Every structure is written in C-alpha cells, then in structure tokens.
Length: 152
Image (cartoon, one colour):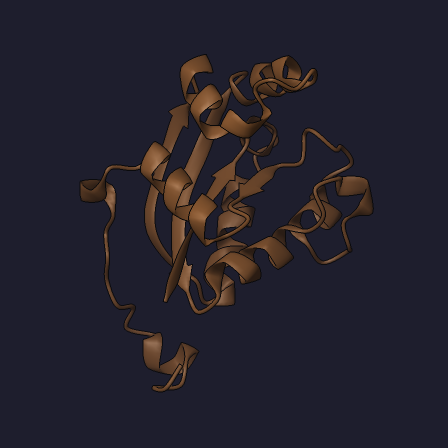
C-alpha cells in the first residue's frame, strides 16, 4: 500500500466541490485515512512550496493558497500516488483530459482545484507537513475483499 497527500485548494472549497472530489477518490477504492479542514498560513505555504519560493510567480501562489480554507487528505492504496495524479489531471486545467477532476471542473492553470503529491519522497515530506502521526486513522475497510484481490 502506498500513501499520498491531497489538498483540496481554496477554489475547490469555495466552489463547493470538496464532497464530489472526495467521493471520486473513495469510489475509486482509495482508503481515506486522514482528513481535516484548515487554513494555510504564509509560513506553511513556504514549507509546502519550498522549491518555488524564489520564483517570480510564488507571491501569487501564496496569496491563492492562503486565501481561504483547504481540505487536506491522506489516502492509501496500491500505486496511490500515480492513481491520484491521473485522476487529478494536467496541472493546467485547460489541458486536463475530460474525466479528470481538473478536466471536468477547472479552467485555470493556478486555480486548479487540487494538489497531489508527485512522487514518494514528496508524499512523505508533504504528509508530515500537514499531519501529525496521531491524526492518521488507519483501518481496513470491510469492503476490502471486494476492492482488491488478496495478492494485490
């Protein structure tokens, strides 16, 4: 099992799409093990987007991510990072395929509804930024035998 961080960004929350987006991950069969609604502070934004802080466009990114509440999630499942990234779609929502979250609900490059970790190292780092270990609620869904074969 692999874990990844998902952030439902302020535009997703403001547009009242959070429930629909979470449902898509659950319907796929990913196991939701942590979730909270929160505000991203400028300091938290700098930690999360550390590789972008020196870029000229960073101030607008920080202004956007701190503009309203977000919903932070950790999901787990086989190849969860790849599966979530494919479900989310291309970063620029105008280029995202229909059937993806961004392709179905977005039109913006920056206001693209969802952040999803892009690899195992990023997922590990980002999960630690947004969640303390005691906030994770690990469990085996009773539906597990109907979602995956025993050897998956």
